Length: 383
Image (cartoon, rainbow, N blue to C red):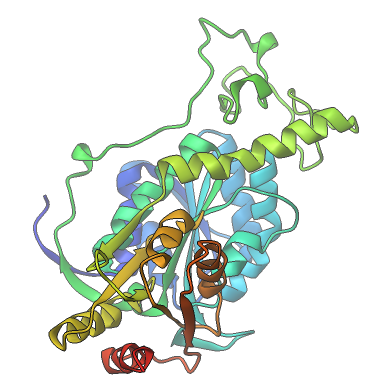
């Protein structure tokens, strides 16, 4: 472990990116994510990396895609309005299987909204914002240290699966300062993308989108001797545009299968006092801490309450929610929007066949939940 430091969640996110091997950052400043760009601008040149500020969010997303194709681990950071602009190129990255990480420090919205206020209105946008069927994995940190850990995990996931990965912080997590001890980067388990082995695969035989390597083909760096075509069009195994229905079907289904692979390898969540919980709170991001306190208050009052924390938000840990729904009387979902994560909770909980009731506890005024607000909802659930 390194010496204890007092740092922000945004700084921890940048530290995680550097520890994971990020060597290119393309971005455009936007509150409340700008500290990530500032730190990467200062630190990347010291480790042989590159920072570039582009003219807008669209260009910054395009820049990291290009750098990733050249073989670098890449990242950008933004907030809701900027994330909306990036989404067309996020879809391009998903279609072309280009690893990249996007930190989205959520703020209150919609539109310009509250640039310095907290919100969680981008949960659905992270998964479904770009058009078509596409793989996008998203993680949701709930503390400063978690911002570091999940950024490292996000890079590993992006590199292993060749997908865009979103780190869904929020304004409070991004700007909150905590005393943390970060691990020695040398002790971390770091995954790099699989590249073609020249002793096995000649450049003339290389298939950048090889369907037999389902679901993740090896990825050659541009300039390494393996030439291939990159297009957002439906393409065959060599990357050339195709209109053949069997090739299109196989491509899109292989891309979609990456979400199931992410479910197998990167599905992260935490549970607190869930073994006998009759009232289950499900929360992610900044609502987690007031929810933890509310559950402790409930336990002290003799109420069997528990907390489930999805750290991977996409794919959603729905199978575990379904299991917990079979023993809970009531599920409460506090989130800083008018009901986005609760839609997934309902989908899985109701499929359990249990007579569980679900309450959406939304807040959109740019303020945090208090433990008392969640505790009151727990008490009322018993009535």
